[in-house]
Length: 294
Image 1 (cartoon, one colour):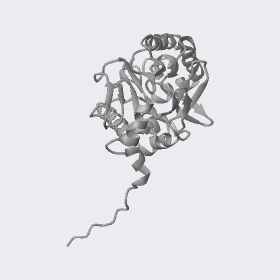
Image 2 (cartoon, one colour):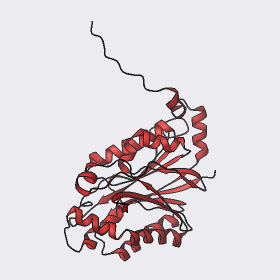
Image 3 (spheres, rainbow, N blue to C red):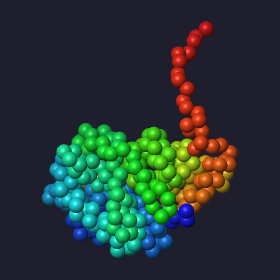
Image 4 (cartoon, helix red, strand yellow):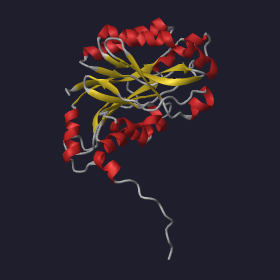
């Protein structure tokens, strides 16, 4: 496997007039990532939902109206994502978009190849906002994606807070996990960031986080957003002592670049100070029993 230059985008949320305006904004960011040398770019969860207010046709839609407008426009949004990858000849994980799956609506993360082929990862575990206000449902289980750099995985926002989600992808061969995220508080983003760093540590893999930032009053889902783009790795010899490969300042929009070498993971898994990746199945959590007071 060769090295991969990855770009993680902290997406500035702003009112967007329609799909054409979204496509133009997306194209600018993808073009900037390509110009910066990126082979693959990851963008935030629900970034495209900044379209919702305009598509719903009124200044402050309710949650159901906003969601319905996005679902109805999902084919056009996905076409814009595919078009950006094709124009710039880049691997693109353009965040997520709500899409219909049978009678349900799921939060779906596309991975678009430079030739326009698309594969999907659904979000599996839903936040309270998604279930209680939007009615978005859990989707298909974790998958892995074959790329020129080997297998990668996608853990959408809340999914990255659960070790078993990412572990399933790592055990299927993923060495890099992309985490598109959308959080409206610093508490929420801290949970995702802590989860991402923990997943990188316990699996001795790379994890990249791309958040939404800012917001506007006309959007129900994206009225306020906080976070920071970050790329994390093992916490062991050959890597930074805190596992932070690269990170933008909090609430700072823009692209974060890092060149990642999967062979460095192989080395630390074989001869690190600890072997987190290997010891996961070798050291199961012991069964808890009641303590005895004497």
